[in-house]
Length: 377
Image (cartoon, rainbow, N blue to C red):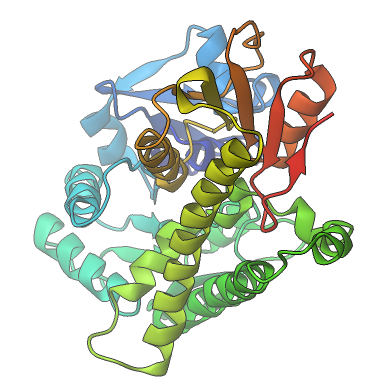
């Protein structure tokens, strides 16, 4: 019997899961939150359209079903929403979308929660699930924790409190190896370790690079892998780090690590702005005769909105000093300008693009990496 799968959220991550399920023979529908319908994803669609953006651009005619009907027939529901709120509003947005996703779920279904949470976050989700559906988790409905990171690698584990996991789900998620089935509390711990390891290393790099001010130090460090870490990489999974920060009250060692990592990213944004202002000063550029282009090819279908938020923050703060600041994400000819242009390359691909296509020698390129390297021909 074919397993009926519904993916809530036409995000990059959601579409990747939908394609994986379809290629494994599941009956898959994905919910576009901007419309009242679920879209059928067949294996031929998964093969033809490798990304959600290619699917949106081509707009093929696809079979559609009302959302409530699709969810009511689902045996497995993946929760992979697109989130764009920030601060305190993010939790309200998540809970609202989670309620919408599970309201019409049927008895015996499996819910797979794909957002990273802090410690105890899944207990809150399960309580909400029981309240909305009237079902009892691990008795007549199943709940799984499967936190997706930005690197598109699927987790090596899946958390559940069920005595017997859903074998169809485990098989659909398998590649060469099946994900390890562990307790939900353990899965929260493993995810926290992964996120904190990532940001502890990043924070150390960012803080140490602040001291590389002389030319020899900067030159030596620029030949290392440090120069290949861009702002785009730094923001990966910041949502998960912030979720962890909500797990604790008061001072403890973990909170110092978490808050220090968040502060490290904030400090880097400030330093990048200072470096841009320093470039103006050293080159004796007037703010009124200077244009700043923030070149960042964002994935606007990404589940988490941290990068979009950081870009808006960076643009707003720069406009306190220079009025003409623009964010650019497309590969277009934007260099016809009477002003001196400073391009801030926020990812490796963006830097490679601007470096290859640079036509105007007056353009100054700043790599948004830990060293805030300057590239000027």
